Image (cartoon, rainbow, N blue to C red; front, side, top):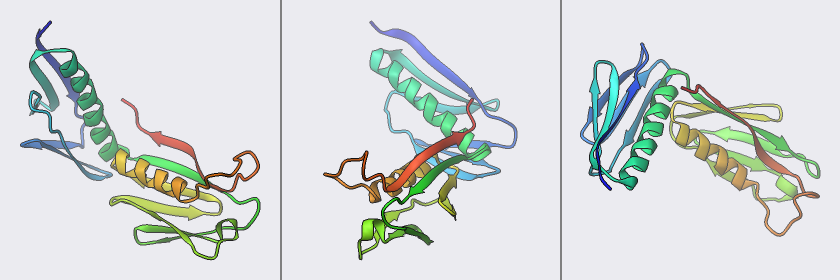
Length: 181
């Protein structure tokens, strides 16, 4: 069954500028700039009266789900440039003391489980890394980049074949925060 037309409107807060260039949406705000490509042929995206309007004509069930997905992505873009996103990771080293350093866009983890070769995790663009004691803080305007960078650090200290209840060494995400609409 086809629906007539589905439409969602997302309010753009003061201090945030949003513009659409073809299929790319660019948001600028106090915390930086973020862009996302929306590649779905039936979806129309426009900015009208300080609102982002997402609409689909002759929508079916798949189009309705894509509308909800795009709605969430637009909210994440706006929230990111307005308030930013923060992920915190804890460095847990029970057997061997780990050394964690940030060098440009790579986090280096030395002496993990006594290994001689340091492990490395890639930090994506637009993400700031701050290491204070045993807490690693990642901040940025793009939720996907911040989350993927945190996952890269967590995966760099993953050990397969070991009992996680005994070998708890590693870097683990302990907190995620960002402004919710």
